[in-house]
Image 1 (cartoon, rainbow, N blue to C red):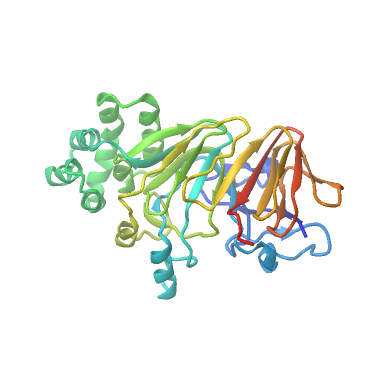
Image 2 (image 1 turned 30 degrees about the vertical axis):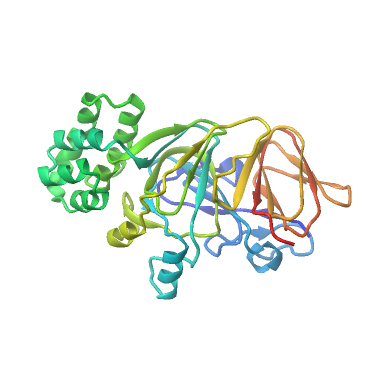
Length: 357
């Protein structure tokens, strides 16, 4: 049977004060993420019907569903990479505290409002020029120019803390003098202000900057180094919380483990919004569509209906529409029949991979 659920609120320090109030409640504190899924890191509770009070993760029909998060970032998230399936299984199997589960984490960020990010590699010569201008040693700059990214990251992270402070003070003027786009300069300034003396700031110079506009998406595969800078969006991902950090965080940093997880053959993929079309990242077992008009979604896959603006009505086989309000989601298992969704304003629907019958 379908289940109406409420999300699990996360209050990480990079969140926006009451930034998710529209979909949760005011707390007067930073609100970073609101989780909807079966991952034990963010228990989602059923709020209607005979299963009221139970965790979605306790209901077998919903196992394997995508994890959906509303994301409100006032400051940058950690500089991070996600492990692929084999590395996650190995780390989890060995009992490493760095791994939250045994699953590959692939994700897509879709902007609700403009969202700045750093992901993928910046042109090596452009990055090297800026790092040279702030006084990074020649041997480390040479690693950047030669595109030895693992070596360059190790070199940048090993620089003296006092040097880091002086280099960061010169970073924004150097980026501006190098002709960086004003948005990229502003994002770098934001990162440096949020994490003074953090060596991860200089590593961010190696990454490309971009801005997602409402409805646009960025698919980030396992193995891609990235950091979301600031904005409001929705994330869809495999049901995993595996994050290996290189910097910009008070949480544990695991440089060698993170670098071992980097996949040079993978790059982030930006997807443009298109009316009536789902954002379907290649190789990922989910898609997302922003609805402003009625849609029928077929059975055979997990379906998560989440209103962003206004309510939505979802009708199943019994012909009785169920109202879903902001802050709630309705979750349908692959076994349930086709559903019709009627949004009042803006609703997202996330679907998982088609399951074999």
